[in-house]
Length: 323
Ligand SMILES: NC(=O)c1ccc[n+]([C@@H]2O[C@H](COP(=O)([O-])OP(=O)(O)OC[C@H]3O[C@@H](n4cnc5c(N)ncnc54)[C@H](OP(=O)(O)O)[C@@H]3O)[C@@H](O)[C@H]2O)c1
Image (tube, rainbow, N blue to C red; front, side, top):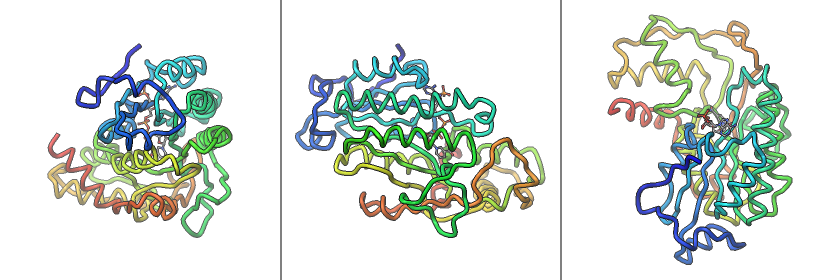
């Protein structure tokens, strides 16, 4: 099995970290014991950010798909049972939103059955589970940011399977699981809107971008901070929302990418960005028109305020400038 493990002071695993107990990650770290954390989806945007942001005193075992396939419930039980973590952070998912429309069974195995098996395995060894979900559980018909208490109504196979996964985790919750919905995630190296736009903007004088879908772009490292915050707070469980602050349409986001990238020398010229309607850019999966999440409850519980998405976009482009 391929296991990536932190090569610094967080490893090697000591005897205490291999023992799951009912006191939770935070209690153990306060007692000066190391906490063992499994990260699933370690090759993805959020998984990489989680790995990079692991707090002191945490031994990280980062699992890629080859190490643990979420579509394989028996493997989930075996790996979690063997590793016996104090906390498990699940950033693995079937994230191909449009392809999911033609692969609903596979999307459901990974996004719903996998988290169900993971919740059961974590429950069996007393591990805390922090599971990542999405704004696409909503239909976009709200006139205000979506709260954790709002009724979900997904428009796509991806959204439906992610909602099933949330429910599977929360159904097994005995006060030790946190499900965190987020939105419009980007980082400096993943498959995401920022890098797609930069590629298009380098090769075309004009790009056409949907202007009637609104959300909150979210930098993976800032999400990782909130996820670790929740991971280390066993007193917090249930459903949480977390994104960067502020709202934007995809068009607004593209304009900001063009301006900020040009300012950093990542683009030779600022291209023309043309706003278009969703109906002018048909996709297999329907997406919510308005998917801004209300993060006030999570921010209050964690004592953390999200940064504005544009400030985090600058940070992300700054990482590309020096890469
Ligand atoms: N990206 C967004 O805009 C966005 C928005 C809202 C919520 N989210 C949620 O945030 C979480 C992380 O997303 P992300 O942006 O980091 O996605 P990502 O970059 O596509 O990463 C997904 C990760 O899941 C892994 N994975 C896929 N199928 C798997 C399987 N069967 N078994 C094990 N691992 C598997 C991938 O491995 P490979 O590298 O091998 O494919 C990859 O490491 C997901 O729960 C997603 O639903 C994302």
